[in-house]
Amino acid sequence: MVLTEEKKIRKIKRLLLSNITYQKTRLILKMPLEVKAVFKDGLYYLSNNSFHIMVFEVSFDESFEAFQGFFVSLWQTIGKADKKELTAGALKIKSELIKTVLLEMEWE
Image (tube, rainbow, N blue to C red):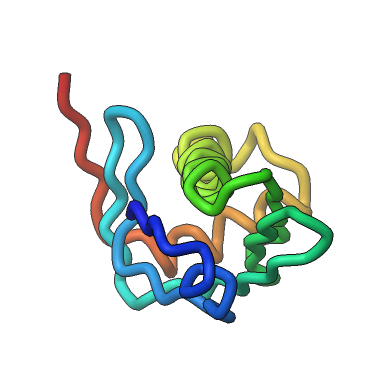
């Protein structure tokens, strides 16, 4: 998502993502994921309470990429992990990820 008009970007309060793409991975979601957006003190903050994600960067595009990278990393390290390897907290996150992610696609 590339948005170039700063005034429009700063007015965004939330995003609804139906898929998340980072590097060579795309996650198709069962339902849109709500992401809160805030511009404060020269930084773009993107967050989601369900997955305890908060990222911030100096540009919206960098913040959006960081959010997607964080979510894909959660999926790859917790969502796909064997339950026996996870802590109680990680098991809760895994459960939410399984409820959220429909399909993972990778390409080269």
